[in-house]
Every structure is written in structure tokens, then in C-alpha cells.
Amino acid sequence: MLIKRMFFEKTIATALGIGYINNGKGAGTIAAAVCCLVWYYVSNGLFAWQLLWVAIVCIAGCFTAGVVEKQWGKDNSKVVIDEVAGMMIALLAVPVKVQYVIIGLILFRFFDMVKPLGIRRLEKLPAGWGVMADDVLAGLYANILLQLTVWSKLL
Image (cartoon, rainbow, N blue to C red; front, top):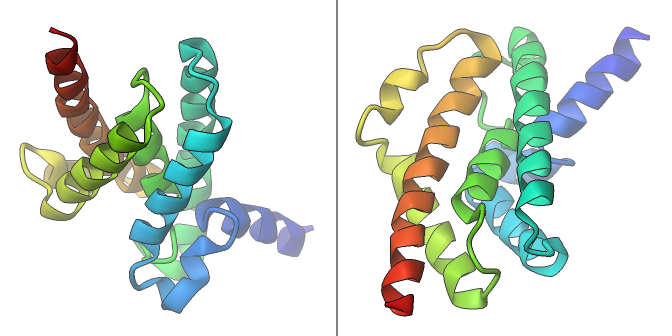
């Protein structure tokens, strides 16, 4: 039972295995890019559905990142569900257009890698919370700038 359970947690934490690519090196960017592709082709633009999926991924990420941390160590590079959650937040309630998805990816990866404006402090939260929180905030910052981009084109 424990083996099956760890398989489930590792599968979710690695975003269906993406985290294993190149032993986790660069896997966060790949996971975010794959998330963009899925979002572009699957998102129907309904905010309620988008919000539901973001919530599911965030909850699953907090739980599974905390579980695999016991075996892999804190914030292991194979854990990329946090990048998926952050990327989804970056695209939340944004028109599903290629240019916005690309801008969202660039903004999210910038905030995720540079970690300005208090993002780095969130990594210190315990277990899965610390793994997820910094990417959630990076996604939120990216979303705010992306919303400003969208609205500036409408004015």
C-alpha cells in the first residue's frame, strides 16, 4: 500500500513525470511550458472552471510536495507541481490567446527564478506549503502584470 501511495504522490508532485526530465534540471520551465500548452488547448475561458482546477492543483501540490519531501528532501528539483500551479495562476482569468500565454510564461518564470517582492521568504514555510507558496505568489504577480497588459490593450 505504501509503495502505491508514494507512486501516486510522486506522480502528482512531478506533474505526471515531467520532474524526472534531466534529473529535475530545467524541469520547472518544461512543466510551466507544458501547462501553457494544456491551458491553451483545454481552458474554455470559464473563470469558475479555471479557479476550480487551480484550487485542485494547489491542494494536491501542498499535500504531495509535503509527502515526497520526506524521501527527496526540501523543495527537490523533481517537484514541479508548484510550477504548474503558479503558471495556472498566472493565466487565470486572462483571455486564452497565444500572445498572453507566452507573456504569462515569461512573467511567471521571471518571478519564479528571481523571487523578488517577498517571494523568497515564502519558501521557508513548512513542508508542502513552502514549496507551493512561492510559486503561487510568483503566479499572482505575473497575473497582475498580465491583467494590466490585457487591459491596456482594451483602452
